[in-house]
Length: 282
Image 1 (cartoon, helix red, strand yellow):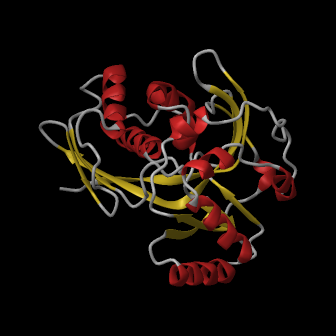
Image 2 (cartoon, rainbow, N blue to C red):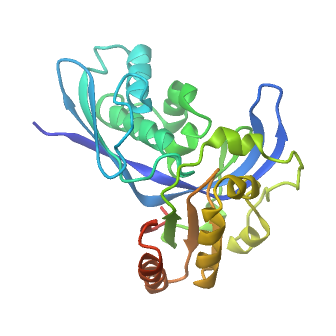
C-alpha cells in the first residue's frame, strides 16, 4: 500500500527576545523563526484504526500513545472535519532530530501530520486555518505549519512574513550535545529583564548581528555544554552562531556549503559524541 509522507522540518530561532512574563505563566516574546531542509519524517497509510509507530535514532522513550502530538493533530482535524473526511491512519514517525532540543520537535511533527492530512484529505485549508485547528498543541505550531522564515510575536503564534531577509538556501549546521533541555525551567530561570525589541522591519541579515537569544544564559546554566558548542562554532568563522529556542541545539550560518561541510567534519572529529546536521535554510 502506498504511504503518504511529510517532513517535520527542524525549526531554529535566529533570534529570540523575551519581553515579559504574563499572568498566565507564558512569556511575551519576539522571535525570528527559520526552518532547515531536514527533519523528522511522517508516513501514513489507510488502516482500520489509528496507530503510531516510532522509529529512528531518537525514538527511545517517546510515547506512541494518544498523548503524542502527532496523533493529537490527527484527532483534532478529525474532530473538526469528521471521520468521513479524515479516515483512520497507520502512522510511522521516524525521529531524526533530538528530543527537547530547541528545534521544534513535537510541534514540527504535529505540523507535519497536519500538512499530510491537508494534502490528502483537506486541500481547501490554508496555513492559517490549519494552524488554528491544531493550535492547542503548542505556541510554535503555527510557525511549524508554515515552515518558512517569519517573525513571531505574542507567545510566538502571531506571525508575519519577512521576505526582505532572503535567507533561503543559506548553509546551516546544527549541533546538539545529546543532552535534553526542558523548555519550562529555562523560561522560569529568565531574569525578567526586558533588553529591548527585535527589529520590526528587517532589511537584511546584518540586523541579526545585534539580535540575541535571551534564553541562552539560563539554558547554559542548566546545560553548560551549550557554551562549549558556541565557543567551537564561533571559532569556525560562521557569519552567525547562536543557540536555538531554549536549547540545547545551536546553529551556525555560513556563506558557502564548503565552509559548512568543513566545519561539520572538524566538529565531528573533535566531539564524536555530539549530534550534527548539515543542511540549508528553506
